[in-house]
Image (cartoon, rainbow, N blue to C red; front, side):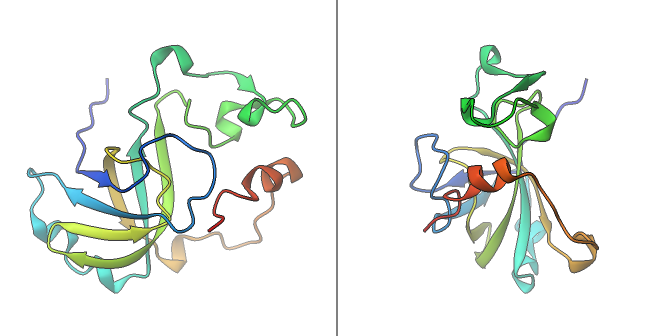
Length: 153
């Protein structure tokens, strides 16, 4: 058994689960009282951070462990849940690279976090070039089609 405790919570204007238009969403990640403010010291010296969060509103009955059509679109191939980024994952974990706007004490202001208001944050990591892919990234056409409006502003 693995037990994780949230280190913070997402605050933003998105209260409904939606699949697209996350590009201009600005969020505040507010640290939990169990975390000292110094945990965020110098995060603003990085341009981006990776945020790992918990899809807290996904009920047990919606969890997928096998394969499915992404967004239930039968025009796209049936692919394994671990071959897509849907929220109905076995452990309900989400991860997104966000733009860091600023830090104000225990609050980290970011843009492009695809998590709704109230989402528990499990970790924040600065993005370093050395952890990015060292070779060209490729993906199937359905993934590009699925993502065409995801970051739309």
